[in-house]
Length: 441
Image (cartoon, rainbow, N blue to C red):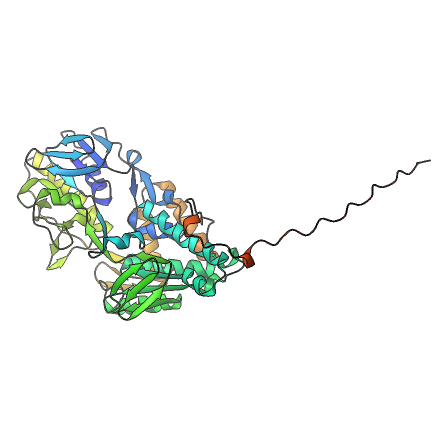
């Protein structure tokens, strides 16, 4: 059994097969850690440390029949039943693909250079450093027009990622940063959220979408709906007849399935996901399972959402299906049990649907969201660290000192004008004559 990807689905599939003595499991991932993606935006906005939302895969999977391999999968040869990786091949009897999604820039791959998305720890650190560098640049900028550009932040896409990024960034500018700077007031920063559809969080009921918009505006986020972006460059963002001058653009709009599944040569949907069978296998390939963000699954005429609980249920179902096949037991189709979904907007602000019927907003929704996320985190240390940090931030309206810039910032920094240079040292005082010695009697 070869599992590609140690995300939510892959990890659950490996755990489900961990006690099956007749199965030998190999988990392949290009990173050595499992990542809790729903909280990536909090790393990007300097609320959490990268280590708070990640855990080494080897420390999670301890079963004797399971091994972990650090490698990047390149393609799948279904005829020879091998997974092609960098520097070799891995044969399989059954294969599980849970490689997740990547950014989609809607046929504009050049936008990636100026509008980073948020899928990996590297993405989160990259965004954090772009945001913090923008304030550093504004602090030393002498031109007020350019200073406003540095203090303008545009997030494209008002799905959960975009909404959470916008809310956290607005909170940071008004509560965490003001005391750190002398020449600028970070509370004057503009956070602008652009959405091409008529409302934010379009997958949620309209009443919750409107509540989310109101909460964002309370946090001083400028929400623009029906704003179809036509151009993004180093100078700003263009949509319709309007252009916003900014030096920091963040991407939270489109996603596309990992390109690895294209090598299966099976039908894909518009997002590049495999149209799987009820058993979560690729069409015509009974030994290849596809789960998580790379699987297109419909239930009751609606698509199963690409969220962590769905991927975890798929992973557990695949593990059970393989055990049932080995034991010659009847196989059951996958059924998704919707436990709900939530989007957090800021400190004490959230919206969500619980068990597909209870609509929640405000502080109760935020508390449920916090409890669910802590419960799903991998590792006791991570749960305690995140819980203590959230408690400190909630009651103090501040945050830990995680605002680190570890990369080289000089290429983005403006030239230092003479008026902002450090003042010259005062002239040296004339040297005083040495005191005369006085005899002591």
